Length: 197
Image (cartoon, rainbow, N blue to C red):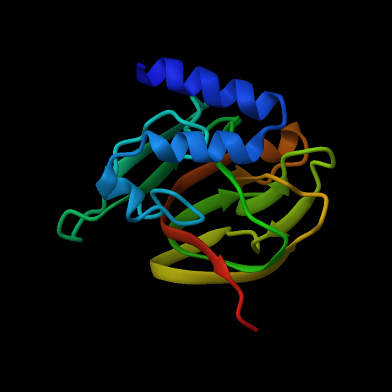
């Protein structure tokens, strides 16, 4: 099957609440070298080409912003997610990845750097993608300036009624007046692991 046919099949399964089958069907079509490094977050370092599949990162076509995977200047070929904002009202869209986490405790980790100027900044969120759409994790808002990489680390719990989840990187604007911002932010090494505490 073509990549488009696989994506259509997986999206059909997700739409009909067959989250486990969708995830394992996606795994079956991964090349062996990608299967070996697939974790709770796939392509966590943004080193692989994007596949367009729900369990990989999907990038939007935003207004007044550029979202891309790019080489980090001065880091010997390291690639990361780069988000650059224009000077108008930003409508970022959904930078996201579908997850399949079981019930239990987890830690969301990663790192970021950049400069964001505006009334509201950037967050990572994890939400239930099934019946409730409830937000179950949310990093502190990033606004301001970070010249060097800074790690973030957040504990969260997946509840019983949350069979599938969505990890998102969002501009946390609550209404249109808060959509104005400028700057540039990088994200890298975004991962989720079981919390042993």
